[in-house]
Image (tube, rainbow, N blue to C red):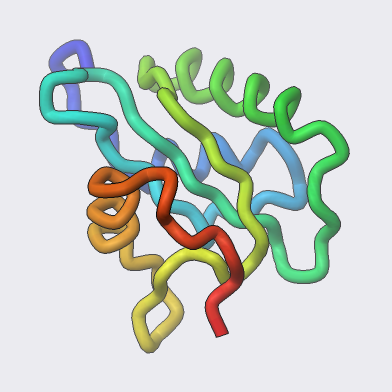
Length: 116
């Protein structure tokens, strides 16, 4: 973005600071498209046991403004998901590459239900 690399983890951490119920370790930020420099998508889970946000659209706007202001990345889409929705490794880390591939290949068909 504007000549500098921005780590996905940085975007995920900044986004999670927007609300105490968001989990920066349960998030996946990835480029929107190869041609859309400075644009990304964010899928972020709510912390275990936390209720769904009362106004998810307002929270998404807050996240979008915070990420843009801190690192210059425009978030094309933000999804706030229940805990356990995103694919994980056996050690519990988010499989960011798999989440991105699934989302970019068919964004509307990606299951947004918690994995069992």
